[in-house]
Image (cartoon, rainbow, N blue to C red; front, side):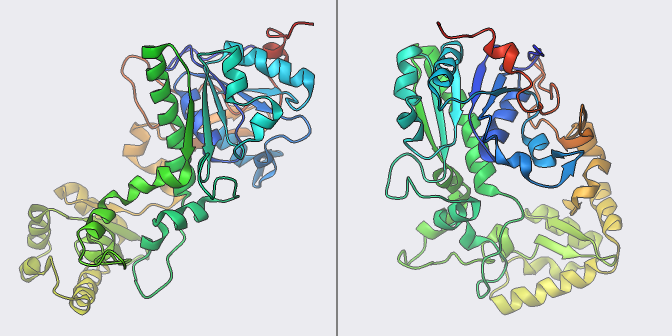
Length: 393
């Protein structure tokens, strides 16, 4: 039996019941656990989070589960049975927030939805993270990250060529930017409202809705176009910050590596042209057509292929030129900036052994946030938590 509790962070004293699975909700609650919240991960004994079965494994423990669930406590509870429901409601009485990721109506049918919980604890906050939200014609449909990106319009802009299919992003944008970050924002906003009103509430986080602010700049261009019924002036690979400017893009180097060139402002582009001895390039910031753009990108690409990636990276650092290496995941822990910010952390798991994961992205001067302990083994905290909150016999 264990009775571990968070000891630091700006959310110290907050208790969250975590009913989520897979990536969006678990990562969001982990971010809050790193910030000091007591997050109690509740799983069904016969059907725990199936991310636990996803490879790769470290001594039988899923690397995915380890990556999304550190700093939490683990409880096995069959909340589908009468006794389990009673125990869950006892926990609700002690909690501030419930985060759930089921299809709309599932918890209501079990008698565990927001209305039932509010009857026991008027201050409780329910954060529901779903693909399409609690309302609308798609609310009850299944979906995944790629579906939400497609429906939101984000997927239509990924890629560099308007005459080629959209490119599947390398990371789960809707799951994380929409689901995980949306979960954190929803929780903190509802807590602030509760501080003013004394009342909890139900917060509806749609991953499709929450990823759409990523389109803000692109949609501004769309709204300013002459034809609102078609794609107007907005086409894949032609927006200024996604392929439309030759001085803002990715270029290959002599050794097969890549660098990101971000000389967006004229002063940086002028400085770059001067230092690489290309004064004739100064007038090519806005090519007149796609053919001219392609030709100029080819010339810039030829320049970058004259040196290795790290040579260009040093050149960028030495001259403050917005040239950065495109790292592989295996290289992240070697960068001095990421190391200084502790963005790759190592923990010792009792079964998996040494495990590295992404660090805490927010830094607090007075209430430091940090990983508390590695992801708990299944049910490790059941007796410590449920033993202290037994329903009336």
